[in-house]
Image 1 (spheres, rainbow, N blue to C red):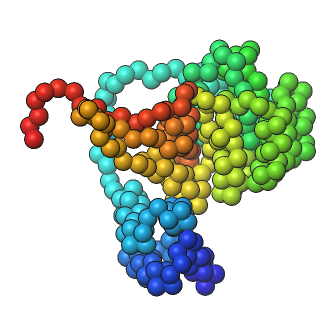
Image 2 (image 1 turned 90 degrees about the vertical axis):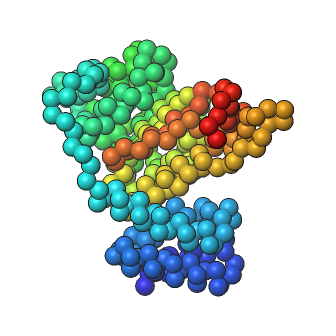
Image 3 (image 1 turned 180 degrees about the vertical axis):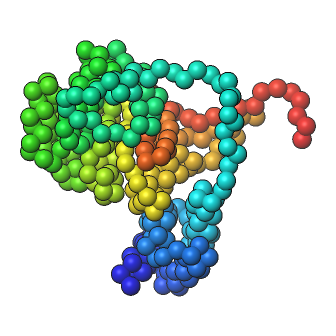
Length: 312
């Protein structure tokens, strides 16, 4: 019953009519039965809908119609068989990955614990910073082994900062990094971090892995990351992970708005939201979410036509 109460609470956020709440609740129960899932799982899907409800950006009917689509997408991802990769295919050569090479050669010293597929993600999103002055903050120090790895990868102009809740990790300052001790779910802690570290180009969240910790870290620090910077959160485990649902809801913000015709042209344009103006892209990988910020804020989204011949 406690989980059902949570669902009712989510449905009632921003909706004043009991009738509208009841309608959405009935829709949720129907979806749960169809998907053969429990109230807890459906509550996680509703995290995607909560911002729409709270900000009144959609009617109750529109919100209710999204629930079956969310379920269908998740069922497709879990149950679809894809064509297997062809054996012996002569594709492009794999790009050398210096971070993975460092990790594979690291057999002694401070420990590093990472999923192997993370190294391709790192190199894809971080390589533009190699050889530049770059300020990197990693949440979750553990044994500190990743800091020498980042120093080796980015070069001599890399500035490193670590965040951890364990006092023992202060010992890692002997490597020339700055360590901050605190709880990443504490917003006042991040206020102090922002005052102490005015520039952050890369933030890696490998901390406590709890959804609330990840959400608070993202909300407090994404606006603080420098233009062109990268936010990366690791270890987002589980199909019904509330933080994964939160990120997918955040990604929907990239699709807000609709273009109108520009006077005197056949082009269409719209003014980007603050989120669209600042955020370039959101990438989802197994267990990882990456958000890239634009180098310069976008002033408009333009849909342009070129050519003279059209079939219809």
